[in-house]
Structures are given as C-alpha cells and as structure tokens.
Length: 618
Image 1 (spheres, rainbow, N blue to C red):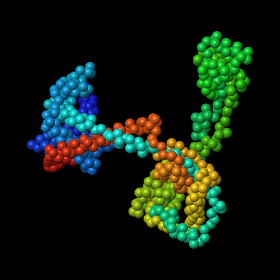
Image 2: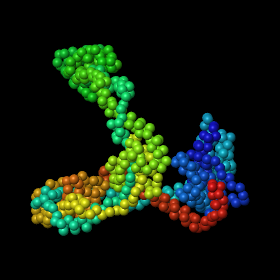
Image 3: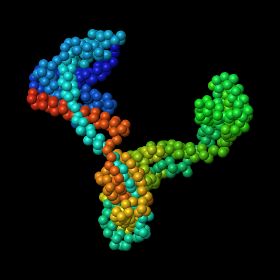
C-alpha cells in the first residue's frame, strides 16, 4: 500500500474514533524534558499530542481553503484555544474513567484495530507491517496508539451514558407545536382610495412644508464621492469600426446551417410490432372504423409520445420520400422505421429557407462589430496605461485618445451608465483621495480610469429641488390617513350590521392559516398581528403600499384552531423538534458534566510548555 494512501485513510478513521485526533499530516516532535502542557486531576495532557492535534486543525483549514494558514492567523481564529479545550475535556473524561475503574479489554481494542482499513492488506486481512509503518509515519508507537484507543473507548462509554440519559420532556415539543402549528380562520377586506368620497388633492404651502420637515430622511442624499473619470467602451466606437468582408463571409460560412435549412415536416409516428398489426390498423383506417388518435390511445400512448417534431427527409430514412409526398393531415404507411413498421401522420410543412450572404450581411456586421471594437480597445489599452504611468492626467487622456471624460456624484444607489459595471463599482467604493488613476477593465471589454475629487457628506435637498416628490409623498401619507379613518368608521358600523360585505367591501375568507404562511395582498407582519387577535375581534391593519397606492385592511378573526396533528407536516415537525431538543439537551448535559469533572479534579496548565509548542509553528 502506498504511503500517501495509508496516511489519508488513517486520518479518516482516527477522526471518527478519536475526539482529539491522533493522526496528522506529519508529526511534530518536541525535544526536552517537559512531556506535558498540563493536567486534569491525575491525567497529564501530552505535549506531543497537543502539537499533533494543533497541526491537524491547521492542515484541515488549509485543505478546505486551499491556502496556507500561518500560525498567527490560526491563533486569531482561536484554533489553539479550541484544541486545548478539546484536550482538557478528554483528560477530564480520562481522569473520571480511571477514578471509576472504567476500561475496555484487549479483545475490544484488537477488534477495533482489525477493522481499520489502513491496517489491512489488499485481501482485507490485518497486515502488521502496514500497522507498524502507518503509526510510525504519524509519530506513534503501537503501545501509545493502543493506549489512546483504549482511553477513547472508555471516554465514549462515559459520553454515551450521558447522552442516552437525555430525555426531553414531552411538554417541550407540545409547547412548540402548539405555537408553530396553531391555525387561524379569519375574514379580511381591503379599504383603498375607491372607498374615499373624493381623491386627495394638493397640499397647501404650509402642509407641504410641515410634511417635508417631518420627513428629512426621504429627501437626504447619501454620502457620495465626486469622481472624475474617463471611459472607453465598445459602444462608443462602433461607428468607427469596420468589419472586413473576409471575416463576414467566414462567419456566414460557419453559420450556413442556420441560414440554409432544408424543407421539414411536422410528423407523428405510430410504430407496430409486426406487419400484421400495422395492416389491420390500415384496414380499420380505410374502412372508417377508427382514426389515428384512437389507434394511439388503444396502444396506451398519447400524441406527445408519438410526436417526432419537425424532421428532415434524411432523418426519416427509408420512409422519408413517402412522408414528404403526403399532404398535411394525411397518413403515410405502412413504412419502415427504426421501431418496426409504422404509420406516419403529417401535421405541417416547414418550407426550406435559403438566405444569401447579402441578405444577412448587415446583421452579421452588427454582431461582429462589438467584438472588433473590443479588440480595438484592447490594442489601445497598453498605450493608455503607459500614458497614465508617465503622469498623464485624465484631461490629457480625454484630449489625446478616444476616451470621454465626465464627473459623477457616486454612491451605492447610483447604478446608471458606467456606474452599472461591477468593476467600476468596486473600484469607486475603494477609491481614496490620494489614489493615482489606474486603468480598470470593464466586463464588456471597455476601460475606465478615475480620480476622487471630493467626499460629499449627506445633504438635505431643498424643498424646491424635490417639490414634486414631496407633493407625491404628502398625498400618499394623507391618503393613508384618510383610509385608516374610513376603516375605523367601518369598524364602528360593523357593530350595527355584523357583516363586512354589507359595508360595500369585498371579503376574503382564510382558513387553517399558520404563522409561517404569507397572504398575497397583505404587507409583511400582517399575520403576526392577526395571531395576536382573539376570536370575534376586528382590527385595522396597514396594507401594502405599492403601485396602486396606500391601502388598509379590516380583519375579523373567526376562529383559533390548534395544530392539526393529522397533518404529515406537523408530524414531521414534531419529530424534528424532538430530535433537535434531545440533541441540544444532551450537549448541554455533557458540557455541564465535563465542567463539573474539571472543577472537581482541578485543571493545571503549563503556559511555558504551551508557548514552547507554539514556537515550533512560528
């Protein structure tokens, strides 16, 4: 067995068997008289074990990210603390197992070793040489590995006993199901501008000013950057680009199958097992006893099953000429096919198409021109980059090249023109006052260079600049206010009539609605408010404020229903909640148990020894 294969398989097996992991991608050996980094009770935490476990964690991160991970970064991620916590936990369990006299016999250890694939030969039998070699490659002796395996098994027994003792009370799941699966039946109706006696008019100066001053956030521009930039995109030079005749003809030749297509037929094919069967079908068709659709249905097929789509004469093989000679709606056959003798029905004719080069020349030129423009820009980019490197200003680029200059006030909300390009947005976001203009390539092959002229703070736009938006905002707010007042009045009227429909509203009934659903035509948070109501309650809830304008909703809660235990979804949710709760409880119990063991036994850490291990990773 190859050394690499042995090491990789061992890592997989040992990760499953050992909490702290015993194998790595190589061993770390520390010389000196210090053999532990601390202890829990009478159990020492081996210094080499800490080094191996720490190295394993680092290599695992590197394997996931495919990037080297320096030890300083590993410490920043807390890998050293996680590894140390795992080893302290393991030592606490080992100490408790020793105190209880808990251990496993040699036969159990042997059984586990014999089951590890890395220690087996190609025929599946245990290979002592592979066993010895693999452990050696990972810095372990047989005695040490077997001792660690014995300890890990004892730990698993302790942990298993704790996990198995975790029983989540039925009340826990019942309470969650009662909440998550609870249902509501309710009626609701929309009150919109059509229920107002007259549309909302225009505000007077005082009303508009008051509303504008009360809503400054709506009229405040975000912080922005005033950026001067020069741009050159393929669209800007299309009128300067010519595509040579040779390239156009080459593209036409490459796409000749698209421009020159043979005549085709829309055909259905019904195949039969033998000549006798198809002859009987033809006789029934001729006598009028049946039709093509019935023949298809009698075979347990649908028309979609026998549809060949549009086919050319060559695609039909030996049946081609006969089928193409058949009129639309006619049936040809019996004729040979790849599935046996068959009947063919012709449903349509697609005429042959032949477009000469001159017919598509302009279209081809329009398609090839952007690519040619990109090549022109690519050829110019090197020279423009050299100009920038030589100290040329953006103004000089605009004067001496095809690039065009503009100044924009850019923020994350600006996405028109060049600001729509992701490369531009990323560069503008990172742009600083002292940055030197650099050439940036855009997605379509264009180029841009920019400089930051000024940082613009948020600015409240004067009312005169945003008057139209302010008027529209006031009208929407005033409409919403009047609608709520109208809805409140309708709720009062409901007490007299007891029927929302009698108030001129269109009523929608909802049944068996749960908290996690969404009702079309309502705003976010609508159901949260409905679930706070009591049966018989009426409430006025804001509706969605979309293109149709503001609206409010009148809601009447008809019934509160418990979770439907017959619903498979509720049963599945109950199972998931029970498993999740039991797992969480087991984890909490185990952590509490380990913490108590550590407190009782006492934890001692040798920071100098830990630092010595860390020094080997620097």
